[in-house]
Image: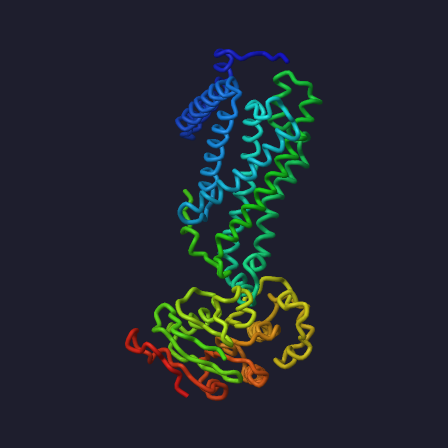
Length: 269
Length: 204
């Protein structure tokens, strides 16, 4: 595989387009030039740092380093998941639910994809594990976030119907049947849309990357198909786990609705 | 026999009373005195200290859904989760007599809930609470949205439930209705703050 390596000058040339954006902002008085600069610097520093960290980790090829970086990725994704929620659970259970779901689903899907489907040697080779875990976490994060959003909103808006079912002798899961179904549909529908338009509207990022790096497009497509299947499966399972965990947390052992476990709504800025 | 033993509902002194089979106990008191909270606590819909026994079985001895199949809370404003009326009744429910007894046509089952009047919804809520034959009915203002004729039918149905061996705890602002249905009364406003009246026995 061969590809054109980028030099510092090349990156500077690419930055010209960003500078053009800054000029537009100045000309039209959008006052976005500072934010634009800050965001660009942040992006550059973050990606450069990740590049060097990964370079180091890949050079080690040790199970310990792979697990360590995987844990950091799950923790960051779990934090991000909670930050995205408009109505979150009070205190640590919020992070517990998010992290447990991501760890369970992300870990299982990545292990399955790497150890069963790709089978690199050694099986924990970070060059495979880290990017796949990253994609799985990113996709699962979106689905779980959507599912929990619809679940908590639904629990609040349909408090009376849910309690009516509970009063009629329904278990907590039966009482949540309608909201549960809606939450899962909301989480899974975007995945279906992504699969339906994959390759037609735009080439998926990973496939683009492989092609740029000199891979045979047909081989890149095979990898992309595998990734899409794993991502969809993992995201669906993640949403399912989050919805069931969410119902357990929104109710107690006596099958009572416990909206008091949700923190007050945040004012979105 | 439904036995309430030192049940502690927030804002109320611990309560003790019994409701025998075939009997209706009326809970009275001004708005906000805790009548609904008491009914919800008996159905284990809200956490409360103390004991509630149904035929010798305390509520915590049973899984909560099983308890609520026996001890049924029926809200003044029944809520609906499905589109049509039928979705809210168990498939095995015998409704061909129950609905007409409340002045409702059986054809109503196919109608969307959203198209029904408040009074129809309240009567359907009562039918829904009774349909699977719970042992205890906790009725919260069961006829508040009904005209005189429908209310009379609902009262007949409630009396029939008593004849069939059920126990009823009734919250109603309708003094005449309480007069007609209740065998005993519990006045929440007159209990005084805890611990002055640790036990509030029902006055016949």
